[in-house]
Length: 257
Image 1 (cartoon, rainbow, N blue to C red):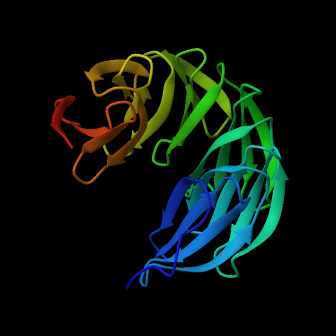
Image 2 (cartoon, one colour):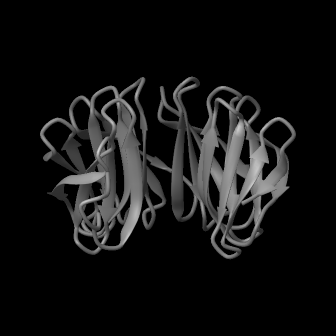
């Protein structure tokens, strides 16, 4: 079916709940989130959130959606059943990334201008810890199998590794210049950092917390995604307007799309 109309204004983030087949799009300038029915490709409703929603994450187990509001320095919690905000959680300055560990029901929010990560307990919708990381944390990813959290620190060109049990930094991994995105493969326990400044992707071994490969990609890679089933990694190259497809077995580019 054709979509009913535009999802929203200045969409900067999108996330999917595969269990409910709902898609959530963050509308940065409109200060709301569009809820799309994946079966009909139509906008079901629009949920008002905080100021400048910049990132989204979903917990399929609890059917909760987390919205990092860059301008109001908080996180809106949306109930996926009622499509309403059920809590607003204050975090650090300029939250620009959010990730969920569905196994532990913990939410990790990267506070860009505070050099920290706020840890939210999803059962109480409250911050239970604040973890100091590197300079300008720009992206965050979770391995639910190992309970490790990976934070790409753009200003310090490294990745902080947080242990989810203690909320302590167990390692800091130097990567390329200005990492802007991080992806995790829980099956292989590999972490991928897209480095905008050096036009490559760093491959981190989740056991040793060391870089085991560096893959040249296109210009200004700004996002990365992982398919654990096929062991393929996709780097979105903003500058060269293409996508590099990395083979996770060989750590080499298999195709450019």
